[in-house]
Image (cartoon, rainbow, N blue to C red; front, top):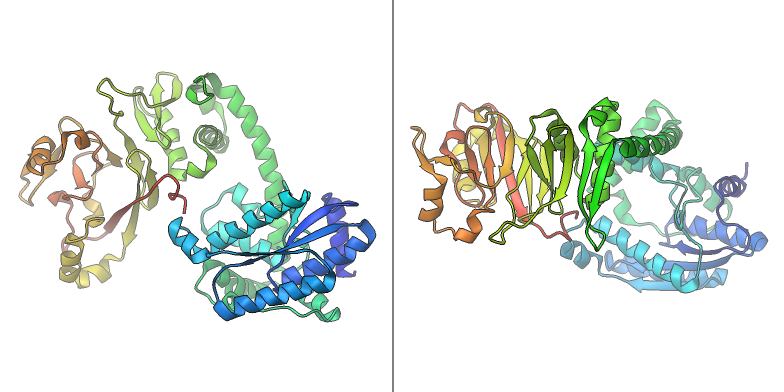
Length: 484
């Protein structure tokens, strides 16, 4: 079947590009976007489409990026299609927003296409993602630990964004360009293996195709199944959520002050569906961008624990178990005007944003054999680090927490077992009184591992008998950049 005919059928299946549609198309100059522009131009003849092309110059790759801009401009002139070019400093944005260059570039492109869509009153933004891109996306999400929602990959149509090429492969696109004798530009960075996506694209997928030449098609089929499964899960999650919900209290401005769920009903749900309810709950309260897997797992443990237990969540919410009720509420100001303390359960490995003090804390295991071979060098170096410390993981007892102080907190100050009260430590270190209530403490169930930015507990130090080394590091992040 002719490739363009195949794509037209796909568009009809998903109700894309109807008669008299206005569409903005992203054009980089690469083979995929050139082929998409050509397809839209051909479709324009029979459906009276209005097409607007957008090119974003990322300020990277110097001369070749300038060549891409000239090429796309001439291409659109040849097709007699309105051309919009935007110049962006992607590297600067990546640094400013603490994002990868890839992500910063993607945001710039979609923002500019959306700008032109609004200006031209267009109904669609067409992008040239194809079946290989879909397989790449699914694999990328898989290795990052995504659930069903991530494994559904990219949708053919989502709000204004359409992907007409999702049912054709990269090879089909290249063959079509050859048949129609269409020139295109080559981005030399696509061949690099520095980026994870490039490794998947250039190494993993070709290896999979050696095992099964239909690997891309099978991965895309799995994505379709996952999309259907996700739709079903969403409906069941909503029913379970409403079944378990007891009450909801809002402020005058609409902010949710408190929400309550029946623990008995939560426990009646299938374990998977119960976690989905917690995910929906957190998304509703704090936004999906602030949710981490650890938050969902913490709430699940909370309802199994004793009454009175509580934990801190992002956006100044706390969760607590009160007999048969799970309560999520906004933190309230104490009488002296300071905020309540916080407690975050920590897993290894994990990376958690601590909303109250604006830091991201990351826990991971490191190669103890390699480090202990040169321990003296490592010990001297790590002891000077403010934001990074190592601990003997097997000396830790019970759950790890990042929390504020407790009345009986003590810090082990030498290997003989000598301790100093936290109160005395704060006084000796001249920590201002107003900072003490919110000072971040890494602790297990028996003692303090680290007063962040200050001192570690001697009891947990690494020595030559250490079998497993825990690396803990943190950095200061703002609410705006914590997702970067």
